[in-house]
Length: 151
Image (cartoon, rainbow, N blue to C red; front, side, top):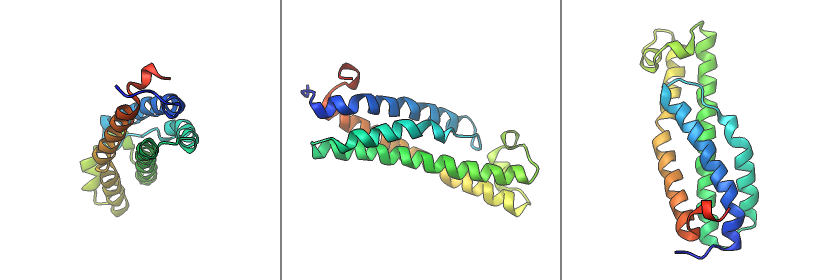
């Protein structure tokens, strides 16, 4: 088992907070293709994670924590793009949450169709971002051991 270091102690709480926030975001994104994704949920924990990353001495741990931050930023980007597309659909007079994503993509309204395609493109990024998230968390735990025992 790895020996917890000061680096690990410094990142344990921010990493655990980011993980909890990402679970909320992923659950929201998985309910329905065009559901609102609470990107603002990630902002405080992402800032804390960036601050903690600045003090990491281990290059391996710094790389893993940076990868986790990049995945979180990716989720924020997805959420922002989906939110913008939702506004386009709402502007067309539709109740976004009541229209399935495939119906948006097949809409005769060009703006709605483009918004649906933008949503789908961004939502298709979620599995790759989730893989990055999982891999970075595993790397961090390989370096530090179970974070819940450190923080």
